[in-house]
Image 1 (cartoon, rainbow, N blue to C red):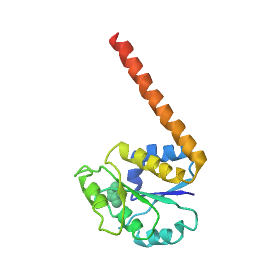
Image 2 (image 1 turned 45 degrees about the vertical axis):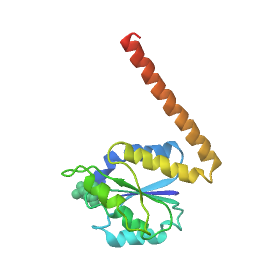
Image 3 (image 1 turned 90 degrees about the vertical axis):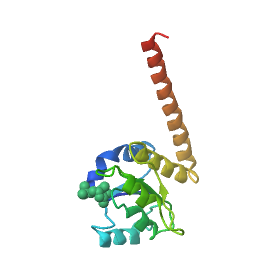
Amino acid sequence: MKVAFLMGSDSDLPRLEQGLALLGELEIPFEARVLSAHRTPGPLLEYMAQAEERGAEVFICAAGGAAHLAGVVAAHTDKPVLGIPMDNPPLGGLDALLATVQMPGGVPVATFGVGSGGPANAALFAARLLALSDAGLAERLAAWRLTQAEKVAAKDERLQAQLGS
Ligand code: RP5
């Protein structure tokens, strides 16, 4: 395992699947766990006590509402912590965004966007961090970026065909 992908609830999972799929596509060993800073504080600390020994190089933490998961994880590691604020009702994720991004000085959390791009970008950012010391992964990332550009170009071609231009 190189990436520990933690979420505060299984209700977060459906919106995180694109990020998990990207880690798989880029052949990055990861594990995903439901661990809550509030509901399971003990098991979260037990997890943090052994995650690095088991290989975790980057932590991705997704939580909604009063989202303290990424901050608590960052308080227990010197590895990079990437926070994903979940867009839950009734406040639409602004609560989680502020809770995740407004960390006190000395405990950094890199916070990603609320909504559909956040999980994918957190996974890609984790890949970029790991690619700094993994040439094979750097190549896979470059190939992935090329494929993404080709997909967008194909969409543009289809649009031009529809418009008859
Ligand atoms: C947070 O509370 C979780 O990350 C989730 O986004 C939110 C709601 O959790 P559930 O009540 O759906 O389990 O801790």
